[in-house]
Length: 387
Image (tube, rainbow, N blue to C red):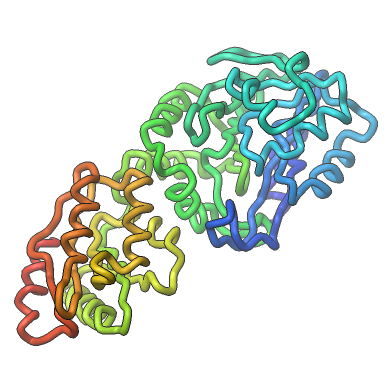
């Protein structure tokens, strides 16, 4: 599917966003191979713009908008989400079209002054759950989606062409020009951006199930037409905190390589017994990648050294991220290493005991330096406990 097809909605609904292929770090923390900032124009008696774009895409956005609008003036700007990667150009757009009305949730109206000096309150139409707005032959129906993933978020359902403008829901990392399949970047995006708010995503999915959705137009990533059931199904699994894949994810944090050697040998033993095993070196991979894998797989074994009487920082960073992302419903194995006073296992256990519905497999394997033949029995017992 080429770029034009990935952003095409219909003859009357045109993509005018910005594709940022050069972006390497999103939100100052997530490594990406570019990202898209999607905005759409609905051509009708009352022309409507659906959101704007990040400041990085300003020039591209206004160039695209000029090509579509020409001398025509929009009647409405729908602001579904106030995060700056989508709302950075609200003020400039409002200044260009002084008669244009802004449409959004009550919370969006409250947020606008925090980001823009221009007084837009007299031009704002606050909408509530289920309210509709007629544009001519198109009608927008507004659905509130608080905490997916900011409190002011709403999504918009276009009733005539059955298009769900889904804000950050169903989005993905990656520039559109890369032509990746949605799933390649979507799980990385979901678990790190939206994943904490599973209950709120479930609430939105319940509302969406009452709509006849033929197209999904998110604020990041490709437009969806033929894969609606697939992506909704993925979101239902992910937001339920259920595993997407059967296997054991084994992230490890090794200082001098002994913990790494022990983990890789154990991974081979598990694979020989028929398990699917995915290992990850936390000293080399970004923590967001580990967060994604931890949520995807049904089991996880963590391995880390003791460091300054604590957990070696790369592992501590992962456990901190899992905690704040509401990690739950998994079986966990623990491997610690400490030459004279190992405490990493105890402290890793404390992290997991504070999480919901976590089963900690016994025994906790405790190494003192390198793996020895005398440790084989403990590793075998942990392998049995992880089944």
